[in-house]
Length: 514
Image (cartoon, rainbow, N blue to C red):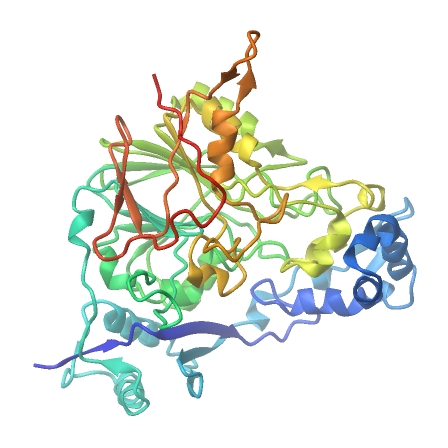
C-alpha cells in the first residue's frame, strides 16, 4: 500500500498572531519597533560607515533616548536611566497565539499557508507522521487531517519515496552533530536531541552533502531545549516529532520580552509531555541523567543590565550515562549573574568531571549600539548609558572554550553553536566555510580557532609552547563521534562527507591527551 511522506525539500515555519502593543516574545515585531525608534542610528551608519559608531554611537543613542518617541515605551528613573513600560516587558502570551503554518517548496511559487484554528494538535500529529513513518493513502483520518493531506497532495508537497532512513553508521556512534546547536547524544540506551533546528534539502547544496532529515535520526527519546532564541527553539522543527515526545525546557515563571515560556508554547502546538527544569534540578531519560545548570551570557550586557529581574533565561545541561558524560553550553559566556568558567569549576566540584564539552566560541564582542543591527535589537533597551562606550563580551571566545573545558576536567571539547554548513549560511548563521567566506573577528570565527587556542595555550620558560590537556574535536555537520570516554574518533556518514576540506584557515594538529 502506498504511503505518503512530506517531501524532504519542504520548508516549515510557524507564524504567530501578534496583537500585543509592542511585540510578542515569540516574534520579531519588538525588534522591528526598536529599529524604527533608533532609525537615526541606522541612517548615520549607512551614510558615514559603521566604523563611525565607535565615536558617535553613545551620542546617537542619547539623542533617541531624549527624543519625543522614547517616552512612549519608557519612563525616566531619575538616575540617568529609565524603566520600560510593563506592556513592553510583559506582552500577554494570550494575545500572540500560533496562527498559521507556512509550508514552502522550491521554487517558492509553491506556497501553502494553513490556519488550523484550534486544530494545532491534530495538525501536529499529521506532520509528525508525514515526517516519520508516513501515512497510508487510504488511512482513516479526522476531517481536518484528511482535507489537509489531500491539499498537500494536490500542491505537490507529498512523495511516496520516504528518502533515507535511519543511518546505519550511527548504530555505535555516541554523538551525531547536525550543525549549529543541534546534536543527538546517546550517552546510554536513551537518545537525547538538543535544540533541533532542521533544514530542508535543496539543490543549491552539494548533491552529496545535504541536511539530515527527521527520519534519518532514528528513535529520539527526549528533546532538550537550552533557551528560546529562534535558532534554538524552532517550533517548525519540533512539529516533526510526535506530540507525546518528551520535551525538557527551562522553567520560566512568566513569559517576558527576553524569554519565551516554551512549555506553554509547546502545549499550544499539541505537545503533551513537557518537563520544565530550574537551575540545579535533574531528571532522567531512561538510563541517562540530565541536569540543568545556569545559562550565563548572551544577555544585553556582560555586566548588570537594566531590569535585572529579566534575562534571556535558559539552561545549560550536563548529561551522564553509562557510555559518556557531556556538558552542553550553547551560547553561554558571562553576564551580571555569573561566568560559565566559574560554573564549570562549581559543577565539577559538585558533580565530577565530564568527558566532553560542547561550547560556543564566537565571543560576540561588540559595543551596545551594534545590538540595533542584530537579530536581538531589543537588547539595546536594556543597556544602561554608562555602558554605551564599553565593549561587551557576551559569549565564550576560542580561548575561553578551552578554559571552560579544562575547568570541567574534560577530555575533549567540541566547538559548535555558530552555523557550520550551507543550510546555516543561507539564513545568516555562522561564517561561510567553503573558501568564499571571511571570518568576522570577535563575532563569527572559523571553528579551527578553538584548535589554535588549544595548541598555543601558553609559553613555557624555555621558550617553547604548552598545549592544553584538552583535545579539540573539529566535528562538521553530519559527522558523528564515538569513544568519548576514551580514544574518541570522528566518523563521516556514508555518502555525506564534508566537501570543503582545506577551504578555511589551516587546521593545526589537535593535542592528544596524555
